[in-house]
Amino acid sequence: MLGLMQDWPLLIHKIIDFAGVQHGAQEVVSRSVEGPIQRVTYRDLRGRALKVAQRLSRDGIKLGDRVATLAWNTARHLEVWYGITGVGAIYHTVNPRLFPEQIAWIVNHAADRVLFTDLTFLPILEGLADKLPSIERFIVLTDSAHMPATRLRNAVAYEDWLAEADGDFAWAEFDENTAAGLCYTSGTTGNPKGVLYSHRSNVLHSLISTGLDALPLAPSTSCMPVVPLFHANSWGLAFSCPMKGAKMVMPGAKLDGASVFELLETEKVDFSAAVPTVWLMLLAYLQKEQKTLSTLKVVVIGGSACPPEMIRAFEQDYGVEVRHAWGMTEMSPIGSVGYIKPAARAESYEDVLKLKSKQGFAPFGVEMKIVDDSDKALPWDGKTFGRLKVAGPAVAKAYFKGEGGDILDANGFFDTGDVATIDANGYMQITDRAKDVIKSGGEWISSIDIENFAVGHPDVAEAAVIGVPHHKWDERPLLVIVPKEGRKPTPQDLFEFLKPKIAKWWMPDDMQIVAEIPHTATGKINKLKLREAFKDYKLPAA
Ligand code: AMP
Image (cartoon, rainbow, N blue to C red; front, side):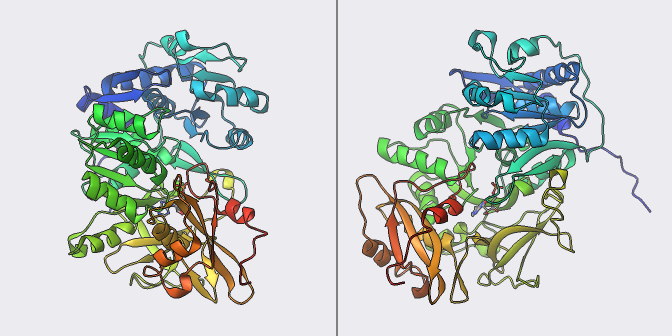
């Protein structure tokens, strides 16, 4: 027997309708690409999104079409998304940090028909214009006063284009499983793969990822999504902020410490989310300028492992609670958040720090397991490592156009490619990407653990650990560091510092100093490139 409740489709435009009606006066504040701070209310943002939808449909954009955005976090970018999905088309977020050839590859793979872009990216696009045959029109997110001359096909200033619509338009109607968004993962091998979110998965992800125990959003919250919209929907905040009526403070193109600090203070931000590199810049700025944070209460840190010293700095020096989170583009992206359950409460701050350095526990709507190479489930004892697999209504079941084939196991779980432990309280800890784990004498060494400790050394700005070939043990760890300005730590300094913190056989065999560690387009250490750079390196004892 079926229940007798209504079929109310979970559609994204219902979120902006809700925000426009119930939180109509709430603001979305942006540092515009042109410079000045701009303010719009949810009521007006909804009205502008309706105009985008109306104008797109007049241009012939319809259900299932792909529309690209190459843009910073601003209200314009957000309203464009709601407009695109409101006609049943698909926003395709393009990461500007990709190489131009990669941008061309994914735009062509997606066969995007229209591309919205910020002024910042005109030079990149002009260089690529002949390689983007599917794009019928480039819409520049600015007004006519700031619109430069450009040879981009049918280019128009967004505000002029939008002014041709009156907003008297009704959202299109379709099934909740209709595709809404497309985001390519920058895999380290093979071609990028497109993750295709649905309206339903985005709405459910907003419900799954927010709450007192997750991303804490409410109408009283002033939230700054520093994490870009092109990085997995800014971890869902593009949808969860309006769904919860939270104020949004969009940092635009300026993510340096001084600019982020200024907006945090002037807009009384109490919650924010970003990758560790962004926070590193903010903390360095605060320390240098002797500033304090007067309103910030909680930060979510994820995308790559958050070093314990960063957690300590936020919590003890600035009174800001850190929630370490983990996720993936394929998971919409939130997979776990580090909120402390009563059962896990620790006595000393050092124990709290150990727990907070883990990546947290999976919220309702995300199922997790760790398995061995024969797919046998491993115990949740906090010690046993295994491949981390996940399932849930906001987890991918296939990639766009079937790229990568069948990606689920027989039980419907997706292999994250991460290696992790899970403890008795459900707290998961990432030890490595499966491809980065160092196999020494048949045992695994966690590169992330060593990196986390190494960046705790006062002379170290950034650290990476890679496995290098060894005649006896197969692989041994090599520590690569970028020293802080004016510092020159020796290998002995680092090894002495690491000695009480890691097992003896985990101790790196050598240390190398570099000027820069390579990063991926989403700010992760690019281990593939680093291994490539050290391919001719020989360990001293080998
Ligand atoms: P992306 O799809 O670009 O967000 O990358 C997802 C991958 O980033 C995950 O599979 C992890 O390898 C890594 N990652 C994300 N968050 C964390 C975290 N908190 N700690 C360690 N690795 C992380």
